[in-house]
Length: 204
Image (cartoon, rainbow, N blue to C red; front, side, top):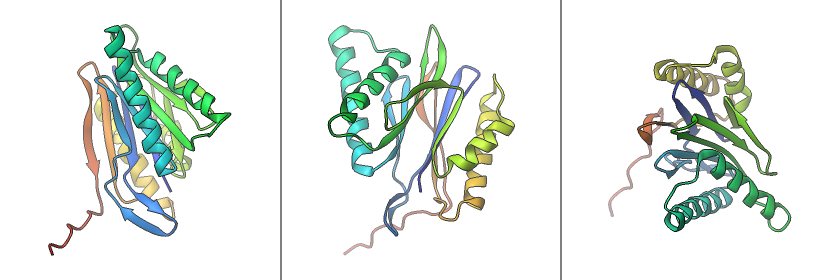
């Protein structure tokens, strides 16, 4: 029951994701980070089958790094989104990935941006987006409270509203969320919202 959502504010983009690793009726862990730092100024928040999610996001991360290594300049956020979309489209006709992606980034020329890429290789530039069962609640909250030019404080408050709504309305709501932000200073972890902590493994 994954929940991934994000939005673009004034000179930054923020993404949040649940941190539950589940299979069938089992929760394996509740601190799985589903938001990858793609490079210094890009974030990839992914949902979908765990194997596809990890393998595909790592594949994109390494290829973006390879492009920068070969050419001496990083891909723009738009270029990274189009590359990701192209790889999903190619795989769609061979061995498709069951993965949905929100790609957030910051470019000096164009500022912050957020791209919605789903498992059938649909690509859209959006101001706000969400995937998973949590999207039913987070999208409605963002429709009500989102406005362009939000400050970091306003955006985090909206993210917290979305998390609260998911926790209170979704029957199998994930307990923990991670929030990451990207702006002119780079991509970084902003905060965790935890209601359950993984118990430390008992020593032998």
